Image 1: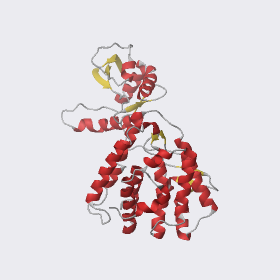
Image 2: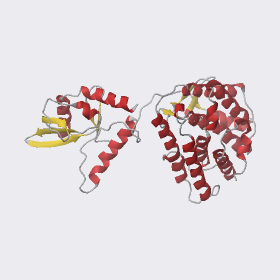
Image 3: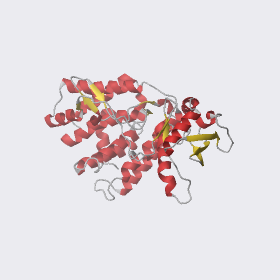
Image 4: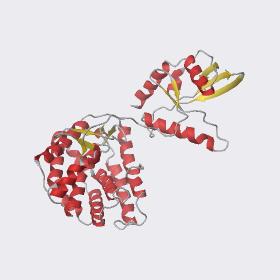
Length: 378
């Protein structure tokens, strides 16, 4: 994957001509620029002779030019894809934007003059005047799925449509996961991020209160250690890398009439472990059961079992029951967090934490006996 990304970058840069550099530099200076020479940094070059292949693989390009009688030399840099957290274009953009913001703040450090992009039309576009980035998406009609769960909790019963929607979600995400991808380093990255990313296990824990009434510091420390153990248990399962949503929960599902729905806010990358989506949705049936009745009872028990059974039948992925534990643990940390759910009763927070810790101690998830994981930990 990383090689193909580098080749795509070379392809983009093949069409980069001297006049492209001239226009770009002229726009920065607000005056006409004359390019004198272009070459690989450290090796002299000549105007009109651009060797861009090396540049496409991350080698700096030295450009000498003249504007209004003054000579300038600048180095144009890109980043090549690698397996150190730079697999995606967004990773590389993050690094280059940070470089632009920080180089000039350190004494004696070389200054960053601009940050920009190469477009598909072989142009260079400056982003140096950025303040924040934004995203524009189409509007989707519908009502968030959590409103269904709120009504079920209030009424204490299910309709046939509730079951239909639950099964539709399970079938949908099982279908998503059938698209596989061979990139072992990406699977390792997703597991690494599950443990240490700011949005994941350690990041959520770091945003817990220093003295939380429902969980001790020692338990959180053990929680992290158990999760690191799971990182090693998941080594060797790179074959499981699949297309994923990454944040498949009831607040990111918009239902319309019947079982028609749209998903929102895909997160943390295109490829990952199917257990991420599987746990993200199904844990909410447990979460709502605890809020509605204080225990593992109907009607959410039926919804949970319908989701899991439908998913397993549609995906054929029984192995997921041996890898989902740290993903459930992560989602439980979010659900129990006072930051994300400030009004949640303390007893519910504690039971969710018990579920997470008990799951982390379990090699196999017995989904038909969820109650055993809700017992006090230890």
